[in-house]
Amino acid sequence: MAVILENGKLRAVINEHGAELVSLLAKDTQIQYMWSGDSKYWGRHSPVLFPIEGRVKDDTYQIDGKSYHLTQHGFARDMDFMVIEQTETSACFELRATKETKQKYPYDFVLQLAYQLDDNGISVTYRVVNPMEETIYFGIGAHPAFSTKLELADQYTDYEVQISPAKKRLHIPLKDGYLDLDQTALKDTDLAVSHELFKDDAIIYNLEQEPAVITLKSKKHGHGVSIEADDAKAVGIWSCYPAKGDFVCLEPWWALSDPITADGDFKHKYAINELAATGEFKTGFKINVF
Image 1 (cartoon, helix red, strand yellow):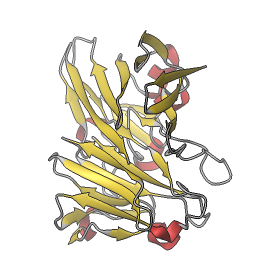
Image 2 (cartoon, one colour):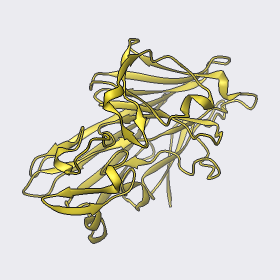
Image 3 (tube, helix red, strand yellow):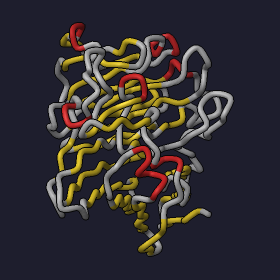
């Protein structure tokens, strides 16, 4: 099932499966800003990454001496959420722990994704609630994929990515899917889009939990999207390679993949979030379209 949000300017479609934004259409231009989800290249649109972003080493981790198996980006993106609130321009989706999730992740949790449509785009709010009488540990992140065919004549290399405020930022490379913290370096963040740009996996910049705007736009006609994130720890910029899909992902993250040197203890995990007993974590981002 899908939920449709609509106003005079935009129409958004969010699937209950994964609470995933699958369409963001401008009514006047008929521009579709989201990637189509063609499984030949990458069969998703905008999954939520919970309770991890990226990978834990060897897909296995330990909590209090017990081992758990959890694959890349966690399980929330592959589960059905419940719609708990809905208006013409907003909706809130909720996922709670189950017997099945506890086999992969031992904590009780409430995860909510709230969407609010306005004339310029859509806001996404993440809320994690800890119903337990002990601290829980988790990661969360976004993975929206945006089309690089906003107009039919567009070429992939017509697009560019920029991060503002403009400055050199710490680039964190990946090696076999894990962070290589020994090879970090300050780098420029203006990127000319090409398929070869992604040959070494996602391009990750440390945002230091400071407000940032990440923009993908055409150099020819000027249409594009931007992500506004006030407190993300990092951003991943990714597309498939060597397959040549017409999309680029702009991914604000509040967690990161394991480093090569990870010891496997989830409570020690790099960039992990701690949430105290009966506490609440809330964050989010805004997708603007132009």
